Image (cartoon, rainbow, N blue to C red):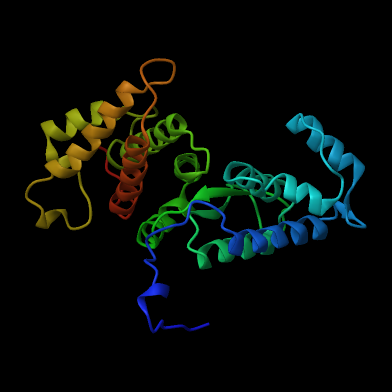
Length: 274
């Protein structure tokens, strides 16, 4: 539907996302939940099948109503429970069409959440989707090609932006992706990857090793090297099992830089720099 508001009251900033589930959105989400659970075959006569209900009770450690409407109401009393109910349905009962319907609904409402397909899931699978924090459209478009090309980077992105993020795993996976990318592009003879810290040292010693499309127009490659150095410092502070957990800003910096490096370096031919 096209709508150009007459007054500012109904002009909404597309970059401001809604983090809760107001009534006008929650009613539609509840309807999506009922339809998805019903079409997946886990509901009969308005009630959740006993084996499915028993499994949910054991997994969630709480007695649950068998009536599907009551079950949905039970899990949509607040923001956190609603997000978890959506996640449970996406991971277990939603098909690709259901996932796209929810994604479109959330986008139309300027929700702070969106839907992503997990690596390895296909259109014919039931489940295999996850609720994630939504990012601005410009960032999503920039990331799409890189995320489609590499499962490790896609996993890092999901770890960073899912509703309950794991920033430690996001940094670790993005770091592993960058190390593999740099070694594959610039040191093809190696069977083991160079750490980003070692790669930075080599680029600083001889910047001609670092090549990318258009580098002939760039006299100073220090900005790209500085990005890598920043990641190396973050990773050194957050090595699994020691140090502190990375912050959201640090994890997003590492993941978004990994996407940028993929788009910058992937088009070039590999080079064996010994």
